Amino acid sequence: MQVDSIWQHISDREPQRETHRSGGTDIDKPEEEGANAAHYLLSRYREAMLEHLLIGELMRKAWLTSWRKPLEVYKPQVDAAGIDVVLVRAGKTRPVQLKTSKVGGRTRSVNVHTTLWDRPGSCVIWTWFDPETLELKEFFWLGEPGQPLPPLDDLKVAKHTRGNAQGEKGDRPALRVVEKKWFKRLASVDELFKELFGPLS
Image (cartoon, rainbow, N blue to C red; front, side, top):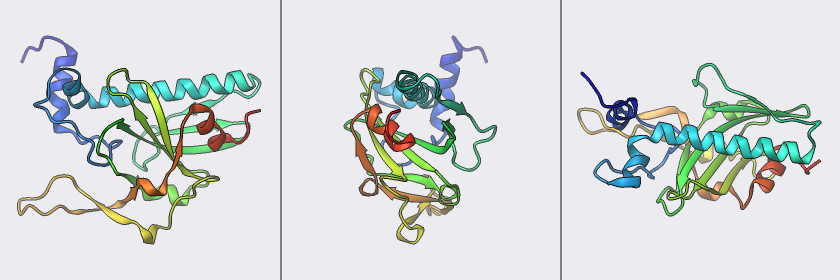
């Protein structure tokens, strides 16, 4: 089948996939038009773009704070344990799971992989962005030191978004539903950087 462009091909396929970074109910519907439709049809593209924007801001902050302590960024070969990126600076290592939501969206929780509870320094960065400008507006932080991961026993097991033939949504044992109340709200990249690596130096 011939397609007009690679982007048309991607947008035709995207609705069939479940994005792992939304993790909640902030999902756009395919019948929406214009920019709103793009958030749904190219959700994977949007996630990658927002990740690059966030990492770029953190790298810039590290550079301006002390260029002798650059931020190292590593990507897992396979996304099988919930770790989207590993950040290292001045000997401190942070395995990070990334989440994104639109400002004004309805998301009240995200699904977090249970492996984070077994990895020292693990954290979740939940980025809220302006859907019109794609500007990073604020962050919700989960991790040491400011907001430790909540006890696993206090969290619900996540469910599949789609039901089986009987309409039942099965459990996803490797994921836990973490509500927004467990996160620490951060207003800037500066605050996020301090949570990740301590005082700016």
